[in-house]
Image (cartoon, rainbow, N blue to C red; front, side):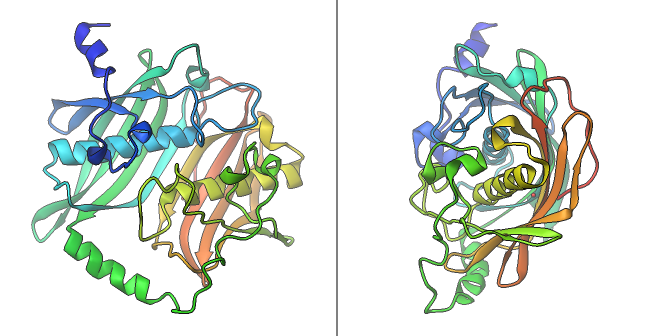
Length: 336
């Protein structure tokens, strides 16, 4: 490794450049422009983390949602550093496909993993003749081999004034007498969702199961420091993603008798269609008619999140047994 590469992993980038409040939640360590439309970022993956590492798997792996957070930070940093996006602008994430391509590279070793993220701008969104969004393809490599890909990630940005005007409509729809505890139902047991700690459980225990669906209330705990690193005016995408994962693990256990400690998230195609609001009952639903498994133990499932009968996000997840470490084939379908 060259001296320049060593220096790139010495310090994290400014937290404001990746929209984080805590320095400990910044994983990006640098970035550079390679060619027009191609950028390369560096990141250090923490061996332990109160949220991303807290699972009941016997073998420690870097969590795919940690990789997704690294991809998110890379997209924001690139936008601010190289695409002339103002530090005050607000971001909206529309959709993406994330998939692990080589699980063996994500086994946690005796030191934090150094990763490189290649970022390609594959499309631009213009508003009134000015760029106000991009679509990105990204890959994350460890020791020179691609471990995961994040494809067709569509993001938009806007000024704070435009954001506040847009969000005023959504916030006005929340009833003045909304119960602040409606998003804090009693939680499921941590072991039911592959967790040790109760504060990392994001599903309520009152599940509704029918012949074709399983529905769980989503816990929106503003005191979870990893999910709510800084004040927000809406439910963050990371919480919705964890809700999708935890429901998928419950379904795998109930329908296929595969325990959550045996499974790792290996693919997620998610589409965010509306903002998730605070103070409203929020439910994650698994469509059991889409549940499938193959001879490798690969499990796929379609899900959505709704508030007041309106879907705010959809997803298709893929879970794979911990023991399977060979390269994964891309499967069709899905929905960030």
